Structures are given as structure tokens and as C-alpha cells.
Length: 231
Image 1 (cartoon, rainbow, N blue to C red):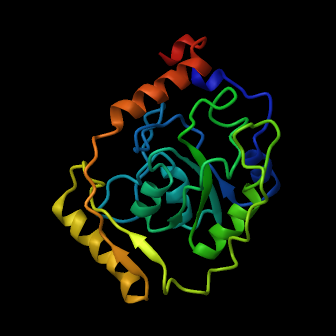
Image 2: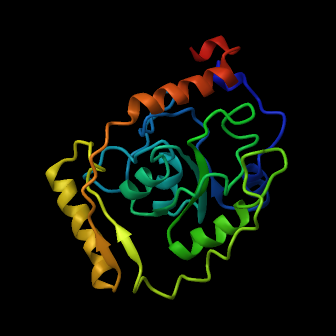
């Protein structure tokens, strides 16, 4: 089973976590934006209206929101940092591809080319500080960025005045609950009130999930096809 598989080399993220106290990361194998674990344990959000904390990094986000830790790391391919951050009222960001090396994490050596490890925290400043430590080149990972990471804390007090921001409720294809679209749209307009230029392009694209799933499944099988219990 999954719990019998042990890594032989630490990833950059793990090395950082082992050297910093009060950092948590849920170790269950979870997928598709819930926090259902292989042990059938469920993590609840601290907000009464939500029966779950989101996923897949739901344990980390719930721990942050409840004050059990100061920083947490998660991994995000299609929302697995951002969704639990939203559900639990904390901050999370999916870094750009290659910003945080993948080696030693999800994949042998890197099955999921959509996923990136990243920080969760209760403040943007804490997340910027944590990402500064996580980011960097790893010669074991050919996809990690060679350039030095910028100073993620440098622009935190500059505001958003003059920035151009594209906003779409559905990216031209997704089914979105009207209430969710309204609330998210109101949040986007806050940036305009703060001086940014918010534009809503009329996107029309096909649902990319089938293409994504083909690529994801192929990469996963390439790395894990010899482990029959995954199938």
C-alpha cells in the first residue's frame, strides 16, 4: 500500500521543513480538491458553514486557521493550496512552475508537471518569507528555474495602483454558481477601488480537463506504473 513506500532522498521542501519548527504538512494521499484520506479521516473547516476544509492540503490549512502552527507547506496542481486556503480563511499561493523544485516530492523524479509546492500562512508577509526559503534551483530537478528567486517581500507595501488585472468568473467554459460568481466578482472589484485596472476579457475556450487528465495520467503511470496498488 501507499504507506509502505518510503522516499530515499528528501526534496528541498522537506529539508526546509525539517529545519524549521511549527511547520505542518498532511501526509495522507489525497486528490481532487477534498481532504478525504486513505484512512477515512476527514478534516473540518473552522467555519461552521463549511463541512470540509478543502483539499488536498486541507489538514495544513485547518491547522493554520486553528493556531496549531505558524507556517505550512502544501502542493497545488489545480487548486490544492488555494482551495483550502479559501475555505479556511488563510493565505496560500501556487508558485510559478519551477520556482520550487519538485525532486523528491510528487513523482519519480517528477510525475506531476502541473503541481507546485508552496506556502500557506495566516498573513501574506509570512507566506512571502516562507516562499523565499522554499524557492531556488535544485540540480536534481531539470525543471527547476536556474535564476535566483526575486525578493518576494519587496513589493508588499507598494499597493496595486496601476497594475492591469484580468478577471474571469468562468474562464470561458466552467459552470460557476451565480452566488460564487457574484462574491468573487465583488472581490475582484476591490482591486479596482485600490487603483488597479481590472478588465474582464470575454474568453471562449474548450473545457481543458480531458486533455489535462490524459497528460496527468500518462505522467503518473510513467513514474508509478510499477506500483500496482496505485491502479
